[in-house]
Amino acid sequence: MAEANQTEVYVYEQVVILTSCVLSFLGSLLIVCTYARWHDLRTTPRKLLVFLSVTDLLSALSYFYGVLRMFDSDSGDCIAQGAVSTFANTSSFFWTVAIAIYLYVFIVKSSQRQADNLVLYFHLISWGVPFAITVAALSLHKIGYDASEVSVGWCWVNIQAQDHVLWMLLTGKIWEFIAYITLPVLYILIKIHIHNAHAALSEYRPILTSSPVSHSLSSMADRKLTLIPIIFIMLRMWSTIRFLLLLTDSPAGHNPVLVTLHGIGNTFQGAANCIMFVLLTPSIRSRLAASLCCRGQDRLWRAESASQNRANACAHREENGNPQNSENSEG
Image 1 (cartoon, rainbow, N blue to C red):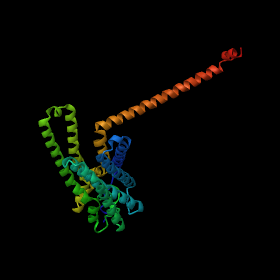
Image 2 (tube, helix red, strand yellow):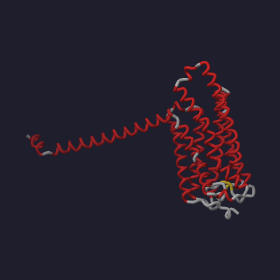
Image 3 (cartoon, rainbow, N blue to C red):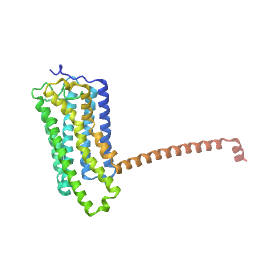
């Protein structure tokens, strides 16, 4: 059955998805590095973003290996790759929702202490539940080759298992569906609260709200709150569509465009987070630019210094080797 329904993955699809994996890996790494580099950025929301980036980094690595290998059987590395991607992908869902819950409690409930107290539970759930699910799937031999039915070259749930749909739900899809509902609801509530607070503030402090800086920061935060659930859904919806097509046994699930979008959507989350929270954050972007410029100037200065030292050394050797200088020194 798996052999007959195997989805063909073309070379150009592999190249595109591998590129997406690399970008996601680099984006996740950049989020972690900026957090480690600048101490004043170590807020709790950004710390949660770092944990999410770790899961996205693991996902990118495991998917990269899977797409590169293009598995065709239940080999040992297929099962290992499927286990890593299952854990990382499921954990990514939990951390994405955890960040939304934290922001909701912090902003809407106006309680930083209550929000910070949730962090321990976020760790227990976001690491513990995916780990338990992955161990259970491995123990029951549910992870393996899926003929790219709901993947793009990598391994996930063994398509030949009779209860493969149930395990696809447990190892990812059910949490994905919950995130589809939870994220928009939480971020809409946050946006409503901010809008109401902003309206009340403008009534009593019109000078502050008319400030261009205040307006730009407020509009930027508002755009990010809008983009977070939209980007998540836009990236993940393609794998959901293929899963639903699998349930209906539709040949549309093999469509190359849909397969490519699925591959990009599953692997680009780390890059998308980097674009939103690093490259589109002016304070961090300016620091990165300044750091790169300083390093470039430092390399240029070192090169010029080395060139000048070599020139001085050559001049010194020529001076010491000049016969006239030798005669003068002898005289």
